[in-house]
Image (cartoon, rainbow, N blue to C red; front, side, top):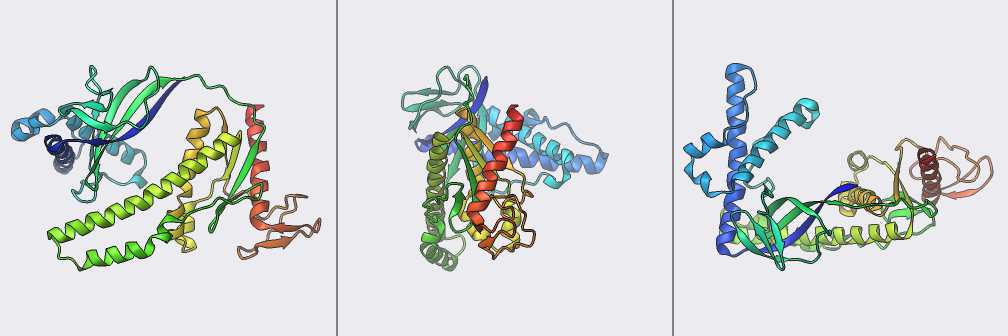
Length: 368
């Protein structure tokens, strides 16, 4: 079975390589915006779409584009084509927008052609850049083929994401150990064995420090060097918070996947919850959506199972002992007594047990 997987590394380019990376990023954004503008003008005049293949003409008009990696310019056009296709497939995605120098991702993508991208000891070979120093904290899979690389810049740091294709035979394990997880705002989740993770709440812990630095930034004069220095300081603090959260999620998801064969989670609408219940800051701080994604791909990689329960399944309202549904249960009711069997039920633990049982039932039907 073939798999595609990305590996992200920190790179340390020299001054000349930094200039080339920034030039490639800026030129790919320029090509994207230029073709988008031309296509909009063409449609207004002719009322039909324009073929988006004008990089050669652009190089004649803008000679400085020849200094860049030609593949990254082609990828900018391909990205615009993909944006158009997504728009016509689903209008809710929105029409393609012009990329802003300040707000868009500072990155460009290049393709591996005749071994133009390769890892050599503690260096990575990239088109136009040559050999760049890299912090190689892990190796690529054996006999893997490098497909492409995305070079990015964030807060003065440079990274490369290498996409590889490799073959791996995965044997599905027998589903024996099953765990259900019920989302909990203060505790991140409560599992079907009545356990809670030690969630660190990184943004809450550093909120005072972040607020102090943001106030300093607001007082700086726009366009000044001091403002730019303070902007980087705030951005690096926010990056530190994000890295703490990501580290927690990776370690916790690895622990669960290693110890259990089946993980069952409710498919709750986190965006709607953040808007309706005024929990936006808390929901963005815990990253439960990213946690579900990690559980999904890590379970596939190890031959285990990740099951999503329908969001309308009454996991909290159903008695885990007799199956009675308490239809009038309120969100504020953390404990309730079953009218059918008389059991005193903890809301979150009961929901986790019901999610576990429903997930195992769904999986058994799929495997039958």
